[in-house]
Image 1 (spheres, rainbow, N blue to C red):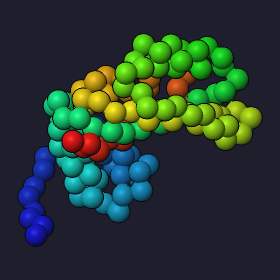
Image 2: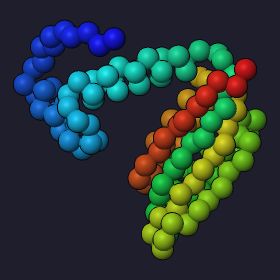
Image 3: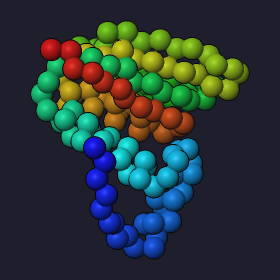
Length: 132
């Protein structure tokens, strides 16, 4: 059952919401707000110690060897969390790198943050599901 309520936002925040709605293809503000609330609730659950499995997806310029080297270094330091790692060369410019992981949710979140914050990563995302 949907319930309606009013929301007051500063003008700049409302403009940012409208930009978010357009850039992510939401039908309206309500849909975007529902998505953001659900996303936040889900992400809060991952700060626990549940055992989860998931995948970290990275996109980067394959010509920049420093990026690949840094990804490899982070993976080597976190071997106990990594089940597998694969690279797919989308075209001459982009590498799609996937890292399959399993461990406590907070550990996987920290690993994902290390990987996605490497300078030059164009896109990075962690997707998890409970595994216990």
